[in-house]
Figure 1 (cartoon, each protein chain N blue to C red):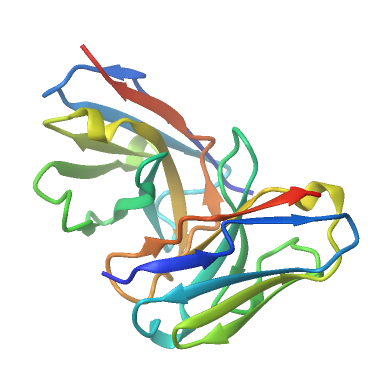
Figure 2 (figure 1 turned 90 degrees about the vertical axis):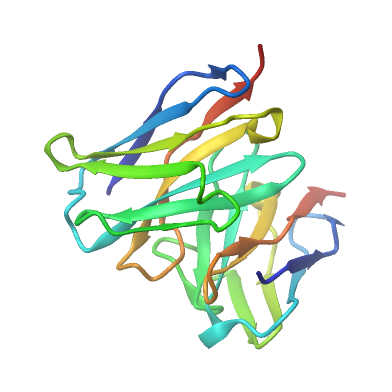
Length: 119
Length: 108
């Protein structure tokens, strides 16, 4: 079954940019699925960030849209998240996930990576 | 966006008992596009139910989902030791998709 693995720095400075990558294994990122980012914090709970299809189509949460970019690298079978203008409110565990056939729910998740915003 | 409210916040039960978890939406969830996930400490959520009542691959039949419109229920017929965890509902019928705040099922 497909496996997802997040990678990236665990510490980001205030006003800095978060860059995370999600590597997909045992499955192709060009399959008929969407690929998504979700974060979880004690204060806000689980929050959907956005998603991408391998052709480059994206959807973003309206509250984050001005700060988020999700991209895909088919040659590396991975997709990425960039979130700029980070504040303490962005401190969370960030998960990547697969949305089967674009149906909206998440059937596979990465193990998550903790990102802390601090100077 | 649709707000999902889960109740109770914590459910204290013994192994073998039945667990009934509620998820109420602030407006009707389109086409019953509601999922349930289980999360254990330090782990990612795990999909249990999608489409309000369809079990995900490999999920035991003691887990069942029901409901439509604004009221949904996850039932665990007989709690096994590995079922003690936090459960989240998630609506994906309206964008942006949203999650409930979770119900913790703990050992009594």
